[in-house]
Amino acid sequence: MKKYIVGLVTAFLLLVTVRLQAQELTLKPRVSGFSTLKVSSGVQVFLTQGDTESVRIESRGFTKEDIIAEVDGGELKLSIRLQGWLGRDRADRNTSRYVKAYLTAKHLTDITVASGAQLTGEGTFKADRLAIHSKSGAEITLDVAATDVELSAGAGATANVAGSATTVAASASGGATVRANDLKTNTCQAEASSGATVRVYADNEFFLKASTGGTISHSGPGRIVSRKTSLGGSAN
Image (cartoon, rainbow, N blue to C red; front, side, top):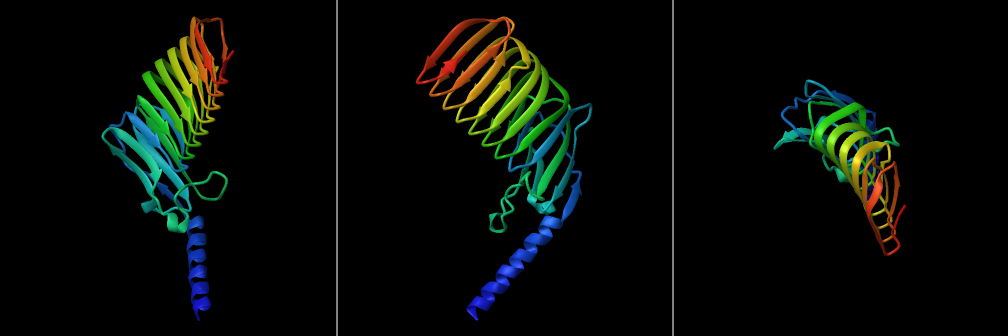
């Protein structure tokens, strides 16, 4: 009898999971008044700069209640609510379950993408100062035109940033990768540690620091003002 009940429960959970995976949704939540963006839980974001603020969400395998798309204190959060008992706590780009957000923003000062999420820019994003952070297996691909750009990647994440800026500060740790060799800048500060890789470009000056197996590769006519390496780090 006990085995029979367990079998019924297992079959029920499997049926619920299959139905959820087949469920497709399109949402258009109202969002406005945000200047920072935080993306997590495997959500895929396609970012465009425009004169309006809007987001269209397409999902499969998640309910409306699972999806977070809200502005709090000037920060737009795009994520998925934890529903671990059904295994629905994260979208997976390699399966049939997904959450895709098509976002239009007027301006942003900070972009943070974490927990396996992905952000892809469509067109060049213009800003005065822009901080871009990729964490915990996330991936960012973005073209920018800015005055000051701060880039960071950690815990196996990737940040691919191209375009132009006056100054760039790039850092990576924990096996992460920053690819900014197509981001043209006058002055670049770069730091890599704990097996991470940073690739950068500068026309005028480089300030480089690599430690604990971190690797920095630089290109462009800029001169190296400062180069510090330790504990197996390299900066070439």
